[in-house]
Length: 73
Image (cartoon, rainbow, N blue to C red; front, side, top):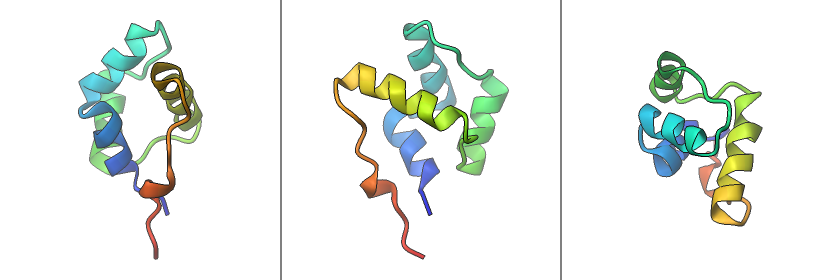
């Protein structure tokens, strides 16, 4: 399992922060209601995760470390 909720809060803080981050790169961004649902549900649609990871990598100059978001079940 993957802790999407923690990932979202660690990297974007809020739905508006996620949208502002993507807009800063001129990248496609979800609408605010969609981003709010991601935070509420603690889930990111599959097609959006690589999109977010790629822009985070561009922003930081290195890939995002994901192991800390793994949840043991």
